[in-house]
Image 1 (tube, rainbow, N blue to C red):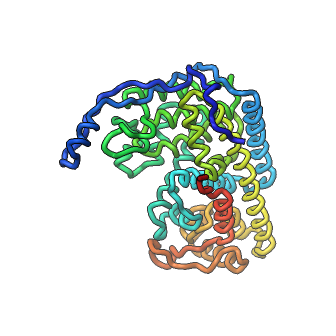
Image 2: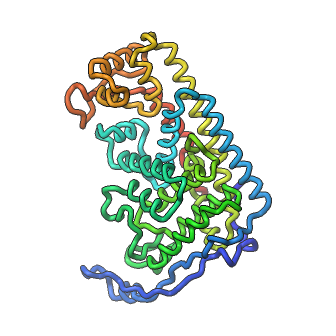
Image 3: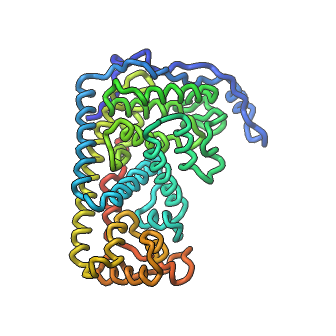
Length: 415
C-alpha cells in the first residue's frame, strides 16, 4: 500500500527550507589533515521546518480514507481486548506496552529478548545494556500515556528524561544545544544525509508542533503521522529522538480517544519495513505528507493483527492455566496468575510486594504455580541475592512474546 513520494503532490508550504550556518571544525587533538580542515570549515545548510500549527494538509482522498479505516480498527481493537480480558485487562495492557517499547527500540537496532527484558524490569540478571535501554523505553512510553491529556513541551522533556535517564551524553530531559546530523562523517555536517534545524530553532518548532498535536479538525492518524514526521525532522535531542517521537504517537492516540485502556503496538507495524518508513520521512521533508500517513496506516493494521494474535495466545494460555491450577479459590496463587502475563519473571519478594502477603505465603503460591506447570523450576540469576530472590519464570509467556517479536521482525532492505 505504501508508495514513494511524487514531487507533483509536494506542498511548498510544508517543504523544508534551508539556511546557511557557519561551521568551525573541532580539531582539538590534531586529527584532521589540511584538506579535511579546509573542506570542513565551509558554511553548511541546516533545515528550517515549516510552521504547521495551523497548516492545511494536502492529503489525497484515498490516503485519507485509509487512515480513517486505520483509526476505526485501532478503536475496535481497544474495545475487543476489554471484552476478551474483562477481569485481567491491566496485565494485558502492560504486555502490549512492553511489546510496543521493544519494537520501537528495535527500529533503532536496540534488541532484547522477552526473558532479558523481564529480568531487567525487576533489576535482576545479567541482561545486558540493550535490555536496560528497552526497560527505560517502557518507562518512557508509560510516561507518554500518563501525559496524554496534555501534550506539551514540558511533557516531551519528561518523556525524554525517562527514556535516557543515566545516559549523561544524551542530556536527558534537555533540548540539544549543538548541531546534530544524520549520516555522513563525524567531522562535520557537510556530507550528511540530513541536517536537522539549528538548535536555536528547536524550542519554537516544538511549541508549534504541540499546538498542531492539540488540533481537533484533522483525521487522527493523519495528524499523528504528520506530528511524528515533524518531530523527527526537528530532532530536538542529542539522542533518543526516534523512541521519544514514537512514544508521542501513543500520547496522541489516547489524547484524542482512539485508545482508552491499551497500547496498540504501532512500532511493531513499522518495524518490518523500516526502509519505507525512512523514505516516507524523507518525502515529508520535501512537502509530501501522503507517504508517511500511508506508512502509519499500514503499520496500524499490521500492529492490530499482530496484537490480536498475541492476545489470543495469552488468552488461551491463561484459560489453560485456570484449568491446571487446583488451589483453593482464595489462594494467593490465583492473584499471581494474571500478573504473570505482565511480568513473566518473578521472585518471592516481587509476589509479596504485588499481593501484600508474607514471605511464606508468597513462597507457597510460587510452589503451587510450579506444581500446576505455570512456572518453571526456579533458578539463581546473576544479581539475585540469597535463596529468597531466586527467579521463577512463566516460560510460555516469554515464548508468546518472542513469537510476537518474530512476527514483527525487520525484513531485509530490498536491493
